[in-house]
Amino acid sequence: MMYDFGQVLKIPTVIMRGGTSKGLILRKYDLPANAVLRDQLILRMFGSPDSSQIDGLGGGTSLTSKLALVGPPSRNGAHIDYTFGQVSLDKSYIDYNVTCGNLITAVGLYAAEEGYVPLTEPITKVHIYNTNIDKIVIAEIPVSNGQIVYDGDFSIDGVPGQSARIMLNFLNSGGTFTGKTLPTGNVVDRVKLKEGSEFDVSIVDCTNTVVFIQSEELGLLGTELQEDINQNLPLLETLEKIRVATGNMIGLISPNETITPTSHALPKICMVSSKKSYITNTGKSVEDHEIDILSRYISMGVLHRTHAVSGALSLATACQIPGTIPNLLTASTGPGLRIGHPAGVLYVESLVEKVDDGWFVARAANGRTARRLMEGFAYIPVTALKAN
Picture 1 (cartoon, rainbow, N blue to C red):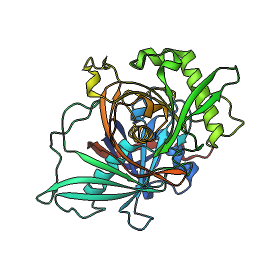
Picture 2: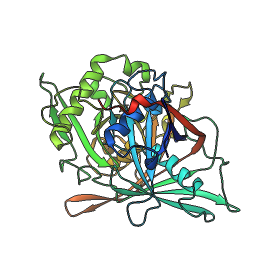
Picture 3: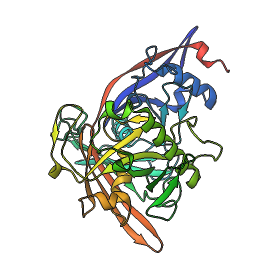
Picture 4: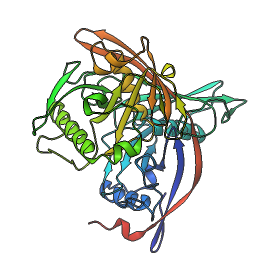
């Protein structure tokens, strides 16, 4: 419920970390039914557009400017509805055309804490209907003595400390946005940019649609960190051109969008290379025998500090399909994949099988952690509800 105190609105808000992301959990019935007014209010809540989000609850990065709209289930078999929104830092825009596996972890924990599902031991399975991808995701919440287990020995690179593991299971997740695990039907496509340069890419659609390109084809080693990528403006421009060109190819970006689209929606783009030792952004050494492939994932036009879960699941799927660029580079021969990313190692699984002339992804899974950070009210000027 939204409370009106004259010139200020009070909106119940929960801030949670899920995996290596952090965002706001908002209940749909606490917000205006009108989508335009709702998004105006949410943008004001986050402090966007502003790269620092200093006058709002956003953290000034793509990883901390995330939104989960939740509510009672609208699909049979689900316990809770979840709509993800990537809140732009520099535009008055919320992107609902993607999803976030990290924040799904937080939603699973939130649903268990809020009583959307009765607790059962030793694992409570929360069935989350992710409206962005029209799929059910199952989060496994550990329970003991009738209470949620928070402490544990599971850790993920990019988050300090240890806590209980929450498994995420994405069922039948191939072709999430395009209807096909390989949107073009090809394991490799040749993309030609307007200035004449050409690149080989593999496009895979599993929980998110991702364009994979070999790092070395861009003149990189594959071990680069944030400063190496984000300060290389010609590289970022080339990556965006490749992303838009492939988006045009598979129908996810309108043909009249040639560069710098209004959002950093699908497809995503990911640079991959064969395993090698490197130093993480925290100074930790990762040896080549600890990983199966190196990946550098672009989020909202810059290098992800760690790695998106949805992008990792797409990468694990690509590694299971013979002939794709990731498949030719990986050292993995089974469903499990250890991904070397800027902050360390991420382990994911994907079960893929050939069906007729396509590929079926029976299950893609990943272990994450989550934590409720705070709850209370967000205070918003009532003028945020004024229509433009």
